[in-house]
Image (tube, rainbow, N blue to C red):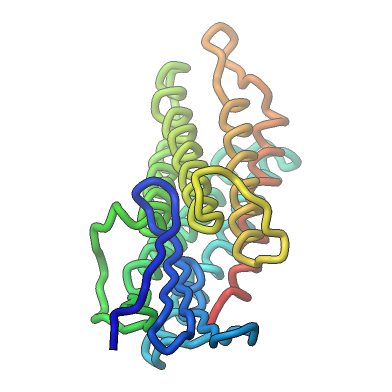
Length: 278
């Protein structure tokens, strides 16, 4: 028997979809997000017959379900806590320590969701000529030529940078320059990393370097809602810059509302992610 024909698609160095045409006439389609989130490839028989989803083995499916549940739940709780912290800042007594404590708790859940998202990528079933195979469990890998790994890694890095911002927010007696350097700069850097991760997520789904619209796809909605949250976080961060001349924020209301609405987007994204499982 001859070797199957292959066609690869993606953006730049990243391959996000592979198609195999087997000697028997059937076609197998592997897509990066579908394989790592749902643990399936699509098999289409010759002719116009509809394709079927061929799942990975039970070990991989079990892993994906557990990791997805943990990551999604962490983002739901983390987003809810960030929204509560912003609500306390906007409508509460003005106790900065209370808001900082709520944000810090939410940040721990974001850290968890970010790392477990990376574990989902690292331990996803691998494809070999249209078949999914399970590898041994790993806690870490370095695979920057995979767009899913790069997106998850940048997301996790963003949650860690936010952690620096949240820890520094407990410091008291800081000058305006110290506030901007220790709290504001990590906030902006974290937002940039979130936005980059979201763009890479669109690259994975769209199989190209520019945005696309797939409103019938659950994965597209998850990426889109999270990216909206990242945009709102960035708006909030820019509004939270402390003016050296006055010692006040550019706009405290925009900063609080941007955080609140952006955090709710991440919670909604987590709820949607609970449905994107094997």
